[in-house]
Length: 382
Ligand SMILES: Cc1cc2nc3c(=O)[nH]c(=O)nc-3n(C[C@H](O)[C@H](O)[C@H](O)COP(=O)(O)OP(=O)(O)OC[C@H]3O[C@@H](n4cnc5c(N)ncnc54)[C@H](O)[C@@H]3O)c2cc1C
Image (cartoon, rainbow, N blue to C red; front, side, top):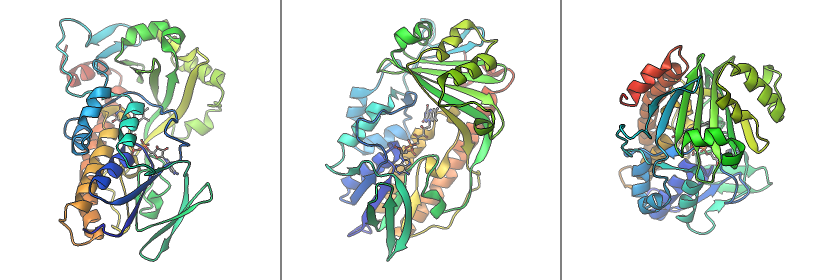
């Protein structure tokens, strides 16, 4: 096979990188994952994820991990409520009269990571390895990590997420700002720290809209409430607003000012001290992005095609990339690694372009003057 005697380094142990590692190991490849987190127990932030049949679930099926997924997924976590800023409910998947089909099962990020990690051979993930730089050496790359170690690999795969440090070795194409910035948060022990919202989210998800702003909430299995605000602000708002995002009080004040006309119930989001917060300007790559294929370097997931999260496709795309890249590299269809990567990149860019377009349309809809009718239609009516 074209991977014989090749050392593969995947940088980034997110869902995309770990899925690729598992699939390549199933074909006997020599693969390691270099991850900046300090260990397997690092706290994994972020809302519950719904996996789609043709992408995320298909990748897990091919990885032999579907049973493990169904032992860890969260039935009913996909039940959605759509509300307006006043707290009135417009769509309710918890209502008895509304048929709810669990066709996109939900799993929290931490158990998804655990399933993937446990499927890998001992020592596959090299923790505390924050990528710094790399240079060409022979046919491959010599990588330097911030912990002072150096590693040679014949093939490097960038799976290091939206702010990839490896992507610039492939292309100079920079992200485009979507017009919306998120403040992402996680409230721990939400039943006591945000009791009204915990009751309202009912183990599922909430989408709330008003004043061209959005709030998206998701109950997690560990009892925390993940959420993100969406606001139309200037591209450099995080740096130029004067808000110190390391100071909770400053962020709470910003929320009160910006969402002050919203119902009291929403104010509970920004009150508890047991909260984690981070701002995230939402960007995407140009829909027609191209780069020259290299024989020893490629990328997947957010590193290749970051996009706003409003179509719920990011994780699914990352896992589908992993599936398609592993197939190209191991199925014996190509004469060399470069041809395999070229085929993968070509299909991945086309697919990601369509999905990015859809995500941008959803971003516009959710932050329009009257998003609820459109959202009701997306969810299949009342
Ligand atoms: C607020 C929010 C909500 C979202 N909601 C959804 C949703 O509902 N559904 C959905 O499908 N997607 C959602 N997404 C998108 C989704 O999180 C990403 O698309 C997905 O995680 C991408 O997977 P990945 O493996 O490419 O990258 P990531 O999950 O970002 O993983 C990258 C990994 O690389 C590591 N890393 C980063 N830099 C380095 C470095 N220099 N050296 C070593 N390691 C490094 C990181 O620690 C991380 O483990 C959301 C995103 C956000 C921000």
